[in-house]
Image (tube, rainbow, N blue to C red):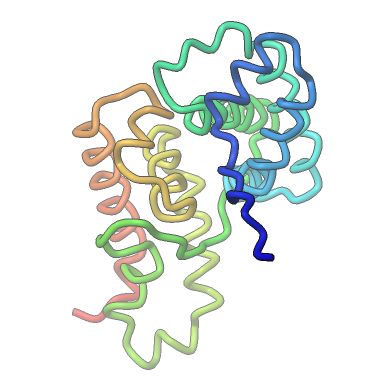
Length: 197
């Protein structure tokens, strides 16, 4: 006889949050397991320091656990958690003056990524200097204002949509777009010697 059991639906974040707010610590553990990889990745990309990723991620989840009772559901749990992680990274960077962001190409929308911006016009001679170019890109990213760097990391490296970034950074979508445009213009100016005319 065929198994007549219906497949179970995955438990939603909203349901898990409500259980957490009612005192179910196992529900919070499920949320940690669900998002720990993304949080580790975000911290690594924002700080460029693999040695502190685990400690900073632990701080993020501890802060989220302590504040879960205040979570109102005005945004998704995912964007709320990313907001906490961004703030922890900003605090770390402010105190350590750490360098930032190895380049990646994780994307979610049809705009060029940082790598595509750099690769589109690189001539053959410059292609031989790819290692130097990537170092220059890392340095240029480290010199961007925090708001522009955050938008680039979340969009070009973490693959968040404009809407998700707006929720994480508490700003309008138009502001996200302008921060990305200014950041890309600054990177192009800084890296103009690597591009053909």
